[in-house]
Image (cartoon, rainbow, N blue to C red; front, side, top):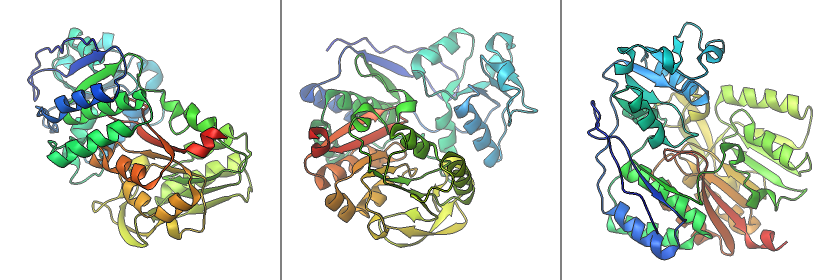
Length: 409
């Protein structure tokens, strides 16, 4: 498989070199994937969380930039300015009032010496980083690497660094790589691992990340949806997935059961639901969190879609296992900020008895390296298993498990 040589440019600040890139022509087969995994497992990363120890600017002020803005406020930090090519439009949007937002062409030399946190996940990181170097910026980092240094007070975990592989990690990861149902899954899994373990950006020419708009509803899923689907939307947030499900089924579905423990998120979900399907009795909303067993736990609320079960929170919530909910879902979607594996372990009877489609995010902690996939693969015989990335920098990773009988039908 042809590949380019890794390249690097000097940087000041916490990194000795910029992030590296490797480009491959094709998605790997099982043998090539095993060889590439050996490279990842046998190499130590030189990167680490970045402390908030100098003035900061944000690059990118769309959804990701707004998340970064709100995150910094929640941890008692500030930034000097935001930089965006649509600066004039961004400055007029809610949340940016009183904040300096500038176009890259308007920056002074001193502003280019600020540490620059990149808040873009819809575009490859390395080409963007090098373009910013050419513009004169000298200290460039992914925003999530900064956020990772605040994990003691804020649970958002999109920037985690994988620990070095032990023998079991390498064995089980290799096993999972061999069991994906297509080479695109192996390519996306390796790209995910390269970023998490090495902070290297690997790309495979015929297996680039999919659009984020398709998250949870790739064609392999939408092609087999039925008119009687029962959706379990766990981590319902503001209703984005429920809305997409209603659109893709054209309103022909059996039931929707939404789970959202964050009070503010749940209120937004219910308001959106009332506007989308006013008075529809096919929809039930639970105010619990999902876990392996029924009980209680501490929840960190008020963080938007980063709200989650965490000891950093103050809200005590009820936890439920999917097996004890009064629902028999045919389609389970899990986006639980790292709680997906625990929720799946609490759904063994539901999974084996009902054989639902399962879509679950796996990029919030090290369970995504092999544990979540292995659990599903061992629990669900005669399923098609796919790994898909829907954004860059090791985020937007989703496992898709589709029963073989759906494809046959």
